[in-house]
Image (cartoon, rainbow, N blue to C red; front, side, top):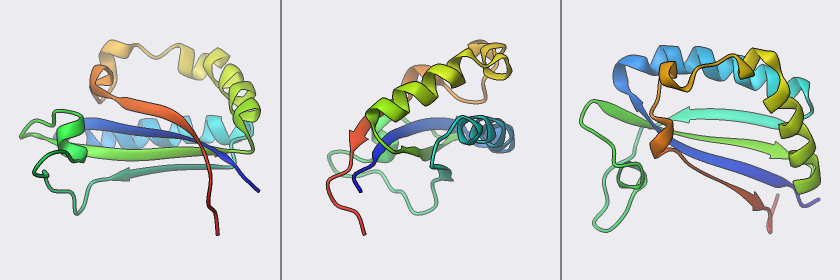
Length: 119
């Protein structure tokens, strides 16, 4: 069954990891409530700058930051679009002020992917 995945890479100030975790738990519950199949947030553990590119370089990571890698799984792109429309209209997320988020959203990398191999 080919699924659809939204993927994210975001820089997080190291002193904001707990605030990010709290936000991610809240967001994850909302996405799952509206039908996402899976919601995963990870923080860098073994991620080094590369010679040409890497996770840290992709978000222009600063010395006092780490990188989060996250994904949300859906049945299809159509399912993703329906779930995201509900999520974005939910007042629990709509009330969030981008200026007070525990990460720099301007340096977030994200996109939708259709799966081509699954086990």
